[in-house]
Length: 116
Image 1 (cartoon, one colour):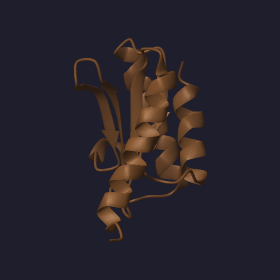
Image 2 (cartoon, one colour):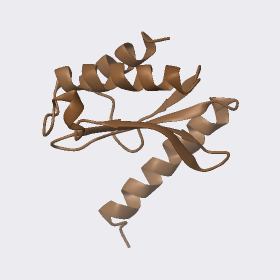
Image 3 (cartoon, one colour):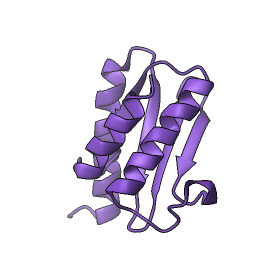
Image 4 (cartoon, one colour):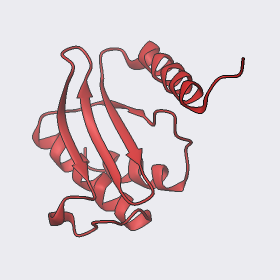
């Protein structure tokens, strides 16, 4: 019996997350999700199971509502870096979930890491 799309997606997500946890060594997780219209990012502490910092293009203060492009990735990456710095977060590991790595992720990571 073949697996459904949802089961395959969940298996991919767990495989990536478990592989990342193996090498995380106590760091916080930077989870990023890109829909067809928006980009969402959050820093999660898996030990206590709560979100410390979150940013998305849905925030009107960023000025990118409904945008999902490289400029939006730069702004969201920069903002998550600023908010993480204010929250005292020094190191995170990047979790892209079941999504594939593409140009927007590279720009996002570069902007987020430049705020150290």
